[in-house]
Amino acid sequence: MGKTTEQIRMWTGAFGKEYTDRNALTTEQMDEAYKKLYGVTGTELYQEFLGGMDRSIKILEVGSNIGNKLLVLQGLGFRNLYGIEISSYAIERAKVNTKGINIIQASAFDIPFKDGYFDIVFTAGVLIHIAPADITRALKEIHRCSREYIWGTEYYADSYTEVEYRGNSNLLWKTDFSSLYLNSFEDLELVKEKKLKYLDNENVDTMYLLKKVKGSN
Image 1: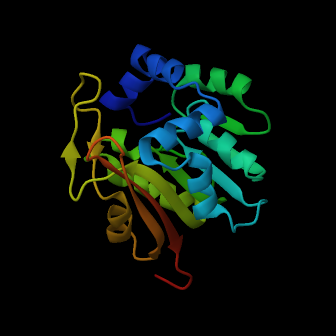
Image 2 (image 1 turned 120 degrees about the vertical axis):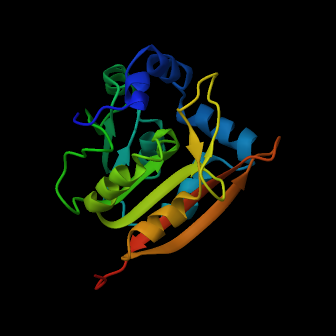
Image 3 (image 1 turned 180 degrees about the horizontal axis):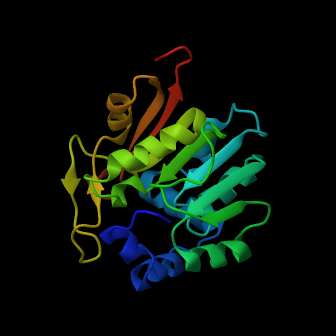
């Protein structure tokens, strides 16, 4: 998988296995979790952001785990769905969890597809686990593989802020990821962004959709 980091070592070990087992949810359970968190289901949010798009487009999730988010997209009618995941354990679980979705082992630092292969490349709670010193490489790979759109759902903060994660440091950071993309690539424009405030505390997530502007240098 190329580049190895402290975070990758955690996610490919026992810590990552525990995460996978803890988050093995059906689409219905995931919708319930979103509803409890934000007051709106994941299916409703995905429909809001991607509902008008052709169902035959190619979509890649970077950090797909067992494919829960891809299953939501499949339920909305999208047919050409791919995922990359660093945990071999999660991939084995994904083979049981999904049908008609191609999930392979790879990392955000070395996405094994040609330039512009996908119409949409997205992450959901993945960029937050990449150290600030390494984030540019991941963003470049995501940008490289996208023909048109970059989509994401991540924890939000105005600037990079480290957050302790299950008793661990150096494993989670929140920031304004849509602005990070826009400041890194001149050919991107913001199509839509929605701040998702938690119902039971002051935390905020963000869902954003970015588009490559044709003719940009």
